[in-house]
Length: 329
Image (cartoon, rainbow, N blue to C red; front, side):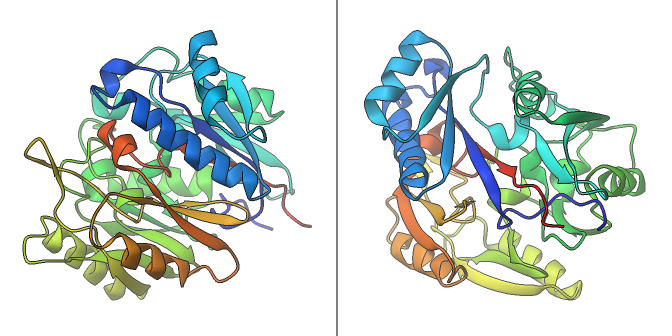
């Protein structure tokens, strides 16, 4: 076998999820965000998969325990933001059949939100999972890349070529590091991510692989969809690269306090038995969940409210990171 970061639909041993604890990151939304994250963790645990929910301290642990299923395991850890997709370990299958955790540099999404524990939590989780750790100096968050398991990865120019990430690296050097560390030998460069995405346009809010060479991209709903041109550009780039593109509805134009929200059904989490799609109180929620369910006939698919989680800057995919199972040899 060749070294590769397996796709999210590959077998998983467990999933880590971050539980919100910082009121200043969720102004007016902390308690409902905790309830929504707990519902996500409980749904996955009740589906039959091990869930390790990270909590910050005694009070945070007590709050989580009051909300989650008894099947959810709580782990007290030092972390700031809950977005483990970006700060957690990226598990790769090595050519010899072993698993290794890849760790990249993390600078708080371009220096915007750097909190105590977020640069260390990925290595801590990997170490406690018994994984060897290989470290790259390149700045990279896990939500900035989405692979299909064959060596093809989707990313956005807005994020990976942003001068606030790796100003000394050009496109070719970034591609070489993705190949060397994660086995991504072919890069599908999409353009911008969603408007007002604090991550500088992470691909996991724009386009996701659901099978080898099969990419989901939203389609604008309503004439005032603020991301219509962004969706169209992503779909066109993928099609031009020979990738099969599947379009699903977007949530449409959603605002909070007059500001456009980067709401996306594409931020779904693929777990061993269940696909969890965030919903936002949009009239398009049911259609969005149904469209994603049709792509995963081997799993159940549910929609869960995610508007409070989004108030903190992300979704269920952003807040979770899977522990890939050992490869079958």
